[in-house]
Length: 142
Length: 258
View (cartoon, chains in turn red, orange):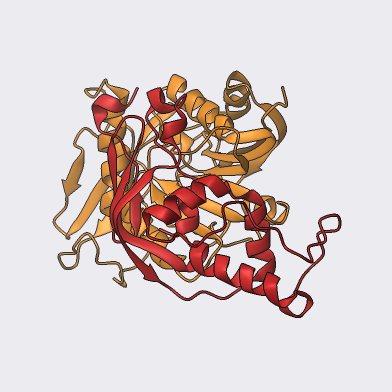
C-alpha cells in the first residue's frame, strides 16, 4: 500500500461516517519499504493539489516522519491559471526538490505490514503483504 | 441455489468464494481493456481521482497515466494479482473491501468505474444500493461508468435471450492437471474454458469430473434492456449515456449537483 492511499481511505463502518475520527485511520506497527518509481513532476503536482494535508501530516508523523511543513507547501513557480506542463527543466530548484520529496514520500513509500485503527470505533484493520484489507466482520455490515 | 435464501450467504458462496478460487485462472483471461471503458478513462481530466469498484486483477488501473485510481475488490486473491500487475505504476493502488462498505470519504472522487460487478449482487435492492454507495463517494457532477452482463445475448455461445430467467449460475471450469495452490499464478493451462451454461438448475455447488476439471458456479443477475438505467435512476443518478457492448449493458451516470 502506497502512503498516498492513506489519504483516500477511512473506516468503512457506517456508524463512523459522521465521526471526524474515522479519517484518516491511525497507522500502527507499520513496516515500510521504499520502492523506486519513475518521477513524473506533473503527476505529483496534481496529486499535491488534491491532498488533505492535515491527514497526511498525521499519518506521516505516526510513521516517524516529522519533517513535513505544517501547511501544504505551494510551488514557487506554479502557474495556477494555465496548469501548464512543467517538465523538470522548467521547475526551479526548490520546487523540484519539493516534488521529488513528495514523490518519495507518497508514491515510493509502501506500508508492507501494519495495522490501521479507526480512532472513532477502535476497529483494527490489517495490512499484509502490502495489501490493506478493509473487509468488515459480518456483525458490522448493515 | 434456491436453497440459499440469504443474499449475503448466496454471494459468499457463489461469488466471493468462487473468485478467490479461480483468481489466477480468471486473471489470465482478463487482460484486454474493453473500448468504451478505455475511452471513459482516457477522457478523464488530468489529475483526477477515481475508484474502480470490483477491479478484479486491476487491468483498468493503469490505462490513464494522468489520473489516480484506487482499485478495490472483495477477493483478496484478485487484489494480490492486481497489486503485482500494477506494481510498477505510481497512479493507482489496490485494496480489499466490500462494494457496499467502501472505505472512502463521501463526495471525494471525480469518477468511478464498476465493470461487470453489480450483476453479482443477488437482490435488486442490493444492486441499487451498490449504485447509491458508489454515487455517495463521488463529488457532485462526478461520473461513473457501470457495466452489467446482458440477458439479451443471443449471438453469444451462451445464447441467453429475452424472456429467459435472469438469475443464473454460470460455470467456470478450472483445469486441474496438477494440484494448484491458491497462489499458483504462473500456470500455463489453457485460458478461457467457460462452457456453455446448461442451466441454472445445477444443484451441486461444485462438481469434480473424472478428467480432473473442476466446475465452479458463479451467481449472476442478467440485466434486461433498460434495467440498468432504471436501477441507476432509482439510485438517484442522472443517466448521461448508455449502450450495449460485448454482451453487456453499460451506462454512464452522473451524481446530481444538488
